[in-house]
Amino acid sequence: MEHKRKIANGTRFLVATACFVVVVAGMRAASSILVPFLLSLFIAKICTPFLFWMQGKRVPKALAVLLIFVAILGIGLLLAVFVGSSLNGFSKSLPRYQEGLSQKTSALLSWLSSHGVEVSYQLLVDYFDPGKAMTMVASTLTGLKLVLTKTFLIMLTVLFILLEASGFPKKLRAALDDPDESLANISKITEVINRYLLIKTQFSLITGIAIGIWLYILGVDYPLLWGLLAFLLNFVPTIGSFIAAIPAVLLALIQLGTGSALLACLGYLVVNVSLGNIIEPKFMGRGLGLSTLVVFLSLIFWGWVLGPVGMLLSVPLTMVIKIGLESNEDTRWIGIILGPGPRADTPRTKEAQQES
Image (cartoon, rainbow, N blue to C red):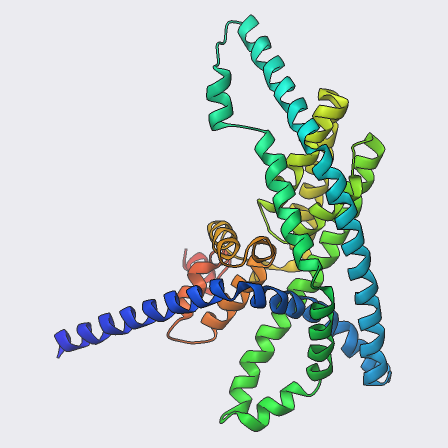
């Protein structure tokens, strides 16, 4: 009997793994369609609290959706124009920036050589080429620009999602066999994701504005572009802010010298530490957390499946999966593993402290 049970568990594991591989392969093959839809869903989830707030103020549903749609469309068009023009200018200047980085690297090697440290230039370029950081940023922003060219499709999808948002729970209640339990789980997921996206968007906006203003004061080229990059990559905890800082700091080094590069680095450090590590966690709460390793792996996984937009949405997507796994008793242990770990003041710990 025990042997049959082990065979059944092994078969279930193989079937689940095979289904996972098929689903991921399908998502990657359909990324051109899936990415605009996920981006639309992401935008709609951010706007849903504003929709419900206006409805609570007795604003007609159609008018509330229209106001939100016009605001999103205006912001989207401005971003499309801004990212396109800034990216074109940055792409034209990219060879000059890469040449400047090569000169700085050669000067650094000469300085090290004068102090008795011999480093091969070719070896340094093979294993650490700063110019590739600029190329990576250009390719990432190009991917974002390609997504923004589908602005009309994305905005139209957002419009229909917002129109369906208020009546969707009634449809689910009519369709599900056990609506109370299912809607409770869906409500929990929706509440947590809405809270995460709203708080994260607010702090990402503050981060982007602060970084843009600081780089503008220092005189770094394209400060609004680096502010936008800081805003977007702030949705990727832990490593997103570090990635956003690299091109701006390197550009400050090329343009203005070592002192300005250190000041730019200091600005990123102050903004991200004060907001990301001190203020934001107080609003976010521990229950929304993911393990640092899971954040990094999700960044790689969703970036591989969906491209640059998948990297930006990696944490919200992983968080949806985590909450979904925690809502099921059979998969709850996987959701706990994906989290940052149990609290230090769990009930078991308190009992142990009382006994001691």
